[in-house]
Amino acid sequence: MKIYFSTLLIFLLFSSQLVLGQTDTGIDKKVFTFKIDTDIDPAMTRRVKLALEKAEQDKVDLIIIEMDTYGGAVNDADEIRTIILNSTTPIYVFINKDAASAGALISIATDSIYMAPGASIGAATVVNGTDGAAAPDKYQSYMRSMMRSTAEAKGRDPKIAEAMVDEKIEIEGVSEAGSVITFSVTEAIKHGFCDGQYASIQAILAAQNLADAQVIVYEPDQIEQIIAFFLNPAVSGFLILIIIGGLYFELQTPGVGFPILASVIAALLYFIPYYLNGLASNWEILVFVIGVVLLAVELFIIPGFGIFGVLGIIGILTGLVLGMIPNQNFNFDFVPAADLFTALLTVILAAIASVGLVFWLTPKVNEWGAFKTITLASTQQRSEGYTSSFYADSLKGKIGLVHSRLRPSGKIEIDGDIYDAYSRGEFIDQGEKIIVISTEGTSLKVKKWEA
Image (tube, rainbow, N blue to C red; front, side, top):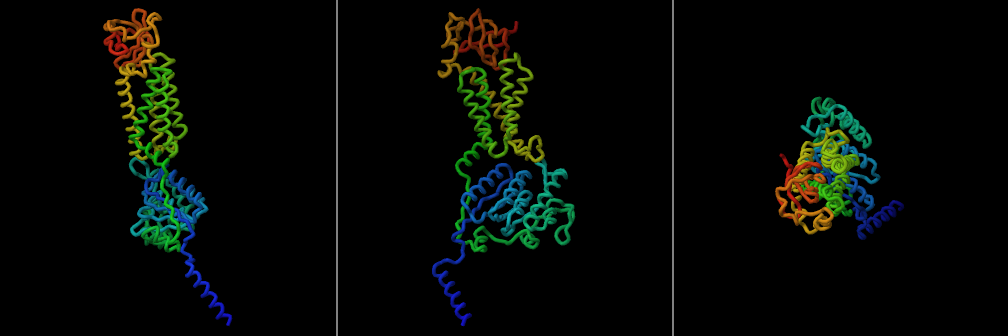
């Protein structure tokens, strides 16, 4: 009789759940997904951090990473796997195609690994960023230890994880010496590095009784999209042009304000996105600032153009280049050759363009209405010893002295009067003789006089 009533009670409870639609299909659960589908680098590290922060804010029950990467920087992979290991929310990975190198390390750090048909995991040998050759053993040793400890933390075979890095490790029935381990789906399941083969994340959820769970797909917000826009090399090159051009015109016309304001804004727009993505370090920005200071000292305090000017230019260009690449202090072993080439090309071409723009604009700048109010032609009187080529059409061919250094614009003195002037691009020091070759506009065009 007791058995009869117990059976009847269970039947009634089950029936009521079916009627009310309360079977455990995950309808009250939240699942958060995001992708790791490019190189593991500072930008990807930032994406993972932001995604996991969003997942925590949304109080989700499960996080699934969709993985397809050939790897990337070891230090960034280490940072990402540490974040995953410290997560209090379960994290699965769905390897949609490849989880190689750094991708394998990150995958092993998750609670469950699922793979799509035809996917692979492994091949975690550390290579340099220049030619893809194996990095020195100290880096291999570091990677082996991370793979081993991560596998141990998640209950996976640490020896197999280590053999994904070191080709010298031989495991009977798993691998032979001379090649690192790369598992197919079947092999990964057999050796405990995959918990199942599924065609999609939805299939994984169905197998976990989460088919009706609320799925939140992470997408970068507008701020991240704006940051990504400013990381474009073409945009970076344009900002560099404004930075250098603004510095030059401010140094030529101190106190104007607009050129230096444009330069500062461009510098902020240049460095902030790279800084947020972990590319531009504090010391690299400091190198740029020191370069600007040294160049200003050379132009305003020390006569001539010597070591301070050269060091200033080097500092500015170095800071701009280093801010674009994922170097670790002075270690460039793992900086991809393509990234370094792109950074150098962007900065060099932008610098050349800015110099060309400066020489092209210098003769015209004093003719613009916005600048006429700050030229000597409109602020000084001839009786005070100042004049301008606007009043001096007959000065062509006159010989005078440089009153304030031409860089390539400045002031000259002819017969006791001071004039705005500019050279043909050359720098002419104070006290040197010049000859007027043109009197067009509000500045005299001059060149160094040779007897």
